[in-house]
Image (tube, rainbow, N blue to C red; front, side):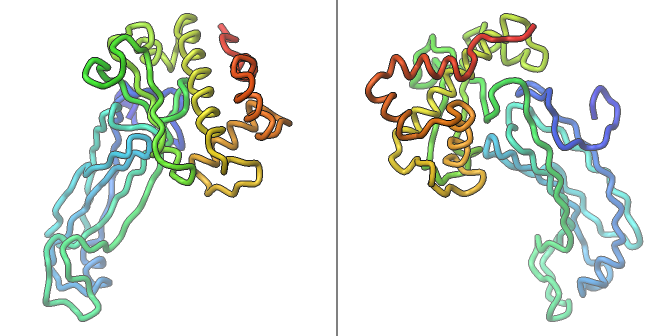
Length: 276
C-alpha cells in the first residue's frame, strides 16, 4: 500500500530507502475442508495461515502474522503486515504458508503430525533499492561503537569471497553526521548537495571493495565464484571500473603506486559527476 492506495506488489521499489516502512496486504482464500482431506487430516483439524518475512540485506527475518483456522468450509483471510524500513534491505522475501496448528496422532500414517508442518506455501519477492549505494545499510550512533565519533560512514565487510554478498556487506551511517544521514534520507529525491555526498560515499565504498578484492590472491579473472557471492560481485565491479585491464596489472599498480591507483579509481567512478 502506497499513500493508502492498493497497488500490485512490484518486482522492485526503486525509490525505497531505510526510512520507508512497508505496508503490505494479502487476501487468501482457503478451502479448509479440501486442505484437510488432501492432507489426510481429520475434519476439524485446526490449521494456521502464517506470513513470514526475510530481508537478505539485514539478515533479519520474523513472523508477520498468524491466523488460526478451526472452522469448516472456505475461509477468507486478510493478512496485514507493516515492516520497519530500518530492519530491511536487499531482497525482501514474503512467505505465506498453511500450517498444521497442533500436533495430531489420529491422522493417516502418511499425514502430517507435527505442529508447524507445511501443507501449502507461496513466496513473493520484492527488491528494495534506491539511488544510494546498492548494499545493506543501517544508521547508528557511532559514539556507541568502536568507530570514531565524527566519522560519517563505515563499510563493513565480513566473510570470505565465497560468502553471499548481501550477508557480507553493511554500510553504516553515523546518525550524528547530519550532512551524510540527511543525504541518505533524501536518496529517493536528492538535492544537489545530497548527490555530492552520495557520490563521495559510492567512490569510497568502491575503493574499499576493490582494495579488499585485490588483497585476496584467489581474486583472479579465472576464479569461479558462486552466483550471488561476494567474489562474483567484486569481479563484476572490477570489470565495470577497469574494463579491459587485468587484475594482475591493477593489483601491481595498487601495490607500487597507491596514489595513482586512487586517482584511477576516482576517474572510474566518475566522482562528483552528478546530474541536476
